[in-house]
Image (tube, rainbow over the protein chains, first blue to last red):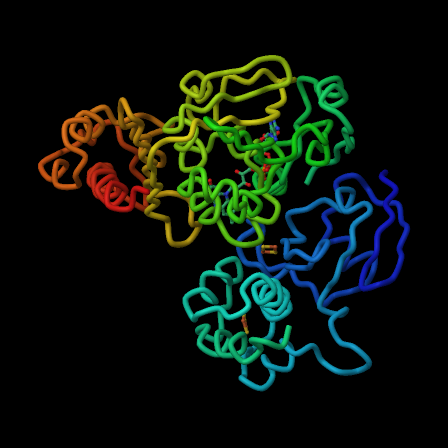
Length: 153
Length: 262
Ligand SMILES: Cc1cc2nc3c(=O)[nH]c(=O)nc-3n(C[C@H](O)[C@H](O)[C@H](O)COP(=O)(O)OP(=O)(O)OC[C@H]3O[C@@H](n4cnc5c(N)ncnc54)[C@H](O)[C@@H]3O)c2cc1C
Ligand code: FES
Ligand code: FES
C-alpha cells in the first residue's frame, strides 16, 4: 500500500491506495468523482483526461501513487460559484457534445490547449485534440466550441 | 493490472539498487502502464525514476545538446534552446503521440523501450548521440540492438542523451493516422563531412539508409533520390502498410526531409 497526500479540486486528501491503483480508478472509485470517464484500455481515447499540476494527462495512464504531492483538477472542479467554466459554457452554446461520454476529457484537453495556444487556428485545435476521440459529433462542433472560448481561459 | 510494489527513487543510486530481474523503471508510464494494463508485462517492483534530479534538464553547449532522461516530450518540443540548436529535434518531440502523451512521456523511456516505430531512436542515430547511463556511455549505433531490444542491462538506468548539433536537419514522419506512431520516419542530419539518414518504422529496428546517404552525399538535392528503389525484402509489413509501400515511403520522406532541412 502507498500513502498519498494530494489536492483534488482544491481539497486536501490523504489516503492509502494499493500500489497498482490507476489515478482514474482512485478518482472515480475512492473519491466518487465519476465525471472522469474510461473509454479504452490503450491510452488512446482521452475520456479520462484531468489536469495534474495544470497540465492535461490521461489519468488511466498514471498511477495514483505517482500523484503523491500533485494538484489535480477534474471536470467537477471547473465550475465556480455555480457558474460553468467558459469552455464548458462554450461546449453548451455550440452543441459540442451529443452523448457526452467524451466531453469531460474534451473540455479538460481544450483548456490546456487554450492555455498553451492563445489564438489557435482550426488546424491547431484539431491537432491539439488528437488525444481525444469522439464517436458522436464528427468534431465540427467541438472545434467550434473551442474557438468560441478563445480569449476566455 | 497485476499487483506490484511501487518505489519512489530519489537518486540514480537508489533506483539502480532497487532494480532486480523482476523490476521495471517507471518514467512517463506512457508505454509501461498500457502494457501492464493489457498484461503484456508484469513486474514485482516498479521503480519511479521521473523525479530524480540528475535525470532532468536540457543543456546546450557549442557542439551538443544534452537532455536528461526524464525530460518530457512537451519540454523538448517547447525548449527555446533545443529549437535554436536542433529545430528538427524539437519538432520531432512535438509530433509524438498527442498532447497528453507528450505531457508525461520522456526521452529516456522512449529510447529504453525502443519501439520499432518510435521517433526518438532515429534522432539518436542521425545526431550521433551518446547515451549516458548509470555506469557508462554508449554510442547510439551500439545502443539499439533489435526490436524492443537495447544494450541496457536490467539494472542500468538511462540518465541523459547527448546529441551532436548538425549544420542542418529535418525529421519527417509519415504517421499511422490512428496511433500517430511512425509508419515511416526519416531523420536527416547534414554535417560538414557527411549526411546521415536514419530511418524508423520501416524495419524491426532503426537503421541508416546507406543508399540514401550515398546519393545525398553526392548531391544534396531531393531530385537525386528520384530513381532510388529501396529493397523491400527487409521492410516491415502489416495491416497498415505493405513492405513495398514502406520502401517507397522511406524515399518520399527522405526527399521531404531534404526540402525541409534547416
Ligand atoms: C497514444 C500514444 C501515442 C504514442 N505515439 C508515439 C509516437 O508517435 N512516437 C513515439 O516515438 N512514441 C509514441 N508513443 C510512446 C511515447 O513516446 C512514450 O512516452 C515512450 O515510448 C515511453 O516513454 P515513457 O517515459 O512514457 O516510458 P515508460 O512507459 O515509463 O517506460 C518505457 C520502458 O522504458 C523503461 N525505462 C523508462 N525510463 C528508463 C530509464 N531512464 N532508463 C532505463 N529504462 C527506462 C521502462 O522500464 C519501460 O520498460 C505513444 C504512446 C501513446 C500512449
Ligand atoms: S481511458 Fe482511454 S485514454 Fe484513458
Ligand atoms: S459526444 Fe458522444 S463520444 Fe463524443
